[in-house]
Image (cartoon, rainbow, N blue to C red; front, side, top):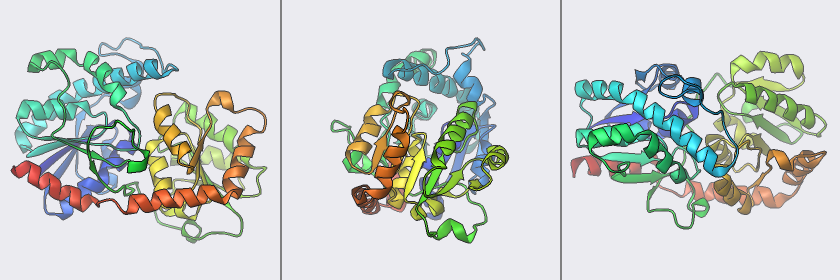
Length: 377
């Protein structure tokens, strides 16, 4: 079986699909990840084969339309953010399709797997007449984005004679069942297994110290917004009686080390570090959040957007996390929330309960067998 996997434009989307890709390879199948030129090194860096199908960069997709004209930067509000996401993920699909067609003509996949908003996967599968599988790459519900992506992709849909985005033959969901939307469509549950990049480990990464450990991260990509997020956040946290570690891409590490020489900072495998943490504070990234849940670590989400507010709300209601939006953070609100998360044992107990729920779900190897049946049926 040949499986063509189409992630999104960021490292997190690759990490989210990597466990299934590895399970398919271990089962003896051929796997190829079709990605952007800038993301191909991330794919090969975690040991998976990659082919670049578009030169469009993540940043250009967000700030310019197909003709290169500027578009509004990330707005605030659920519907405006869904429109924005549908536009730039739709542009990614449109830019990727020519390269995907060329790859598929030479490689002839048996089926196509796409991530949560990898709309090119469904379009390509419909054109080839092969099954498409949609695997969520994090716990966030993205179905509200689909209609806006369809608007952006109307030329491609019309060319294929499709009235709407084609649905998958099989949906695979890594969100723990207790955190799924009540009216979520049926999907095959799969255990979340972190698929992040590694580096040589140091003993402190997998051993707890004498003080509570707080891990701070804004994800795997260096952006202007992330720079400010980390600087302001760590400045506030230095007053805590805790060990602070900053998980950040290496391009940001040097600047952070100069500012906070007393904390450990740099790229660190979060799947190794998170189990040693008493609290993980982050920007609301789905892959980061799932990795913390797997580790049974309470978390504080500090998102800068509303699009996934319902999903984050369910995490907060579960008792495994707290969510603070920018308008909620004032004076010592942040430090109070951290203190509660660190010292109220109920948060840790609930986080470990969600971790046990995730551990009970079918492994990616079982999902690989379901894909085998789909391709052969």
